[in-house]
Length: 307
Image (cartoon, rainbow, N blue to C red; front, side, top):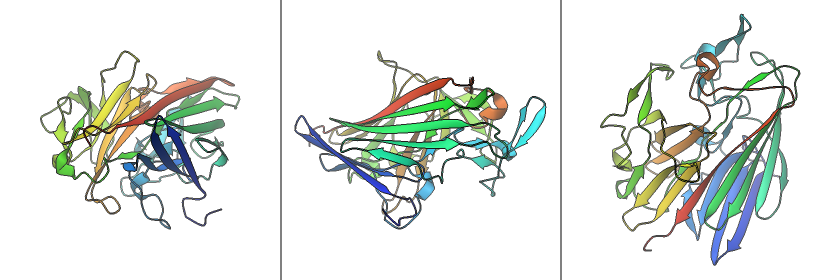
């Protein structure tokens, strides 16, 4: 048992098809703390003994991103969530960010479970689980939620992994993502509308990570034959790190953090089933009936390119 502020650390390892994949998962927030493929950092680590920096790797349930002023309406009654982002006056990143999950782990996978109990601003009871399973080129992540209360509950899922390609510098990394529409936000970073992508944030043909300044949510994502939307980092040697998200995730938030631990910059690629302020807009929000269950999935893969 670790005394780390992110709780117990779970270490996974697999060797398949001649490749070695390792992961570190933190108990608090069920966070993906580190991922490597063949010794190459894919999800960057951060020092022991500190809380997860900039929401690194956490699971965001029952909402991702923000709820304006922490307020929303339920049956003509105003619900008031705790304000967890005081600087902007919002409720941010759900209710399990600082929760220590129950852990059931093996050498190649781990399942972490935590309940969302009825509380101020969210009078519902959810059972949640997240499973991290190593595969030959990375990791697959499965979220499961069941409403164990007696009333329909509003639910959305998000997660907050950062991506890198080993020690490749930001000016050697091209970021590609297919979103054609982004959310325009106000000073509180809450959406006030949508617009077509601009020269500054259009990633469909790729842009250099060093030149990006993003805290931007996208939608209208292009999907492949498997139904996955894919976001990719590629370096000059052809190495790629890709994050895919299934059809439950219609939105993605891209966020550049400067600095990140000992790196000049890292980019968070955040699959979301709903955008910010969904408790008020209703966009992407899923209402689970009593005893109804829901699963959603995403993953990260690495290709070694020419190196």
